[in-house]
Length: 353
Image (cartoon, rainbow, N blue to C red; front, top):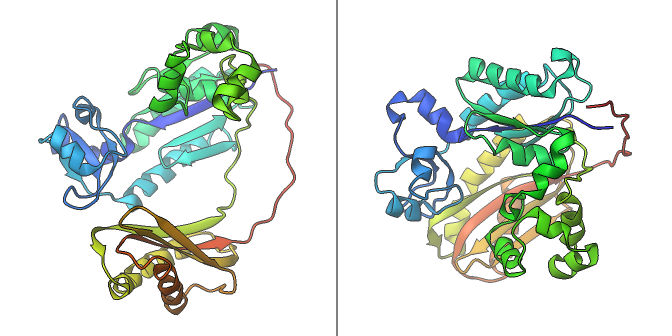
């Protein structure tokens, strides 16, 4: 019994939105992120910028060095959220089993979808068409019997493409898959695997579960399944957030408690706005303050005696957090944690692929 899972991934989402809204940027290296003269980091870069080695999570200062002609656009999350909501409304036309991973990425379980005679491949193609029709943005898709394979497949024909891995081809596909294509295997793990003579999933398949656990710890057992194309994780529909927070990294270190306190009001207003836009049935369990110092050490202070966020509480908590180290500060964060109720797990009956 096989599921039908689609992984949808927008192509360079934030940059694509900015280029769509400013056609003069088309064909030029564009990135979205913080300022180079501060401590900004890129959230994404378009394919023209990636040719120079520019990529997401790269410090902006580094990006402009390797690509001097890079056009940097400031982040506009409210605009990206609006586009993401349009895209998710399209998903809901086909299934209610949707697991968003971020504003630009989601899993869909279309096992029981009757449209297009239940063809997951045609459903993915139609979703991509509707996304472009509604937003003028392109998306790529991966279609497979599980989340691992679908995510790998969505990256195969980027940008603006898709790949279906039929269950009959699963073992053939994963056997030849390079280990650096496994989601979660970064440069460090790839190097470790290569040093062990592991280049593909076929190499992983030759190792026992005990050997994989010895070399890769608790992740070894998951690797044992993944290299065989096995992934039983369900597409989980959005659950209530356990917390909500805002934070800011400052271009210059804040050298005193007074300097830190001057930044609180703006952060608090941002938190209030996010709380106002969140669902109304959340119950706050505690308030949280995070402080990261100039040397990247950090401390987090949580107080459950406070149930209502206000500036006075956060000022008191920031003061206590600051005096734990009394060092220049590079980042301050404010947040809340919500009460949560655990619900029983549900099982589902699956149809044939």
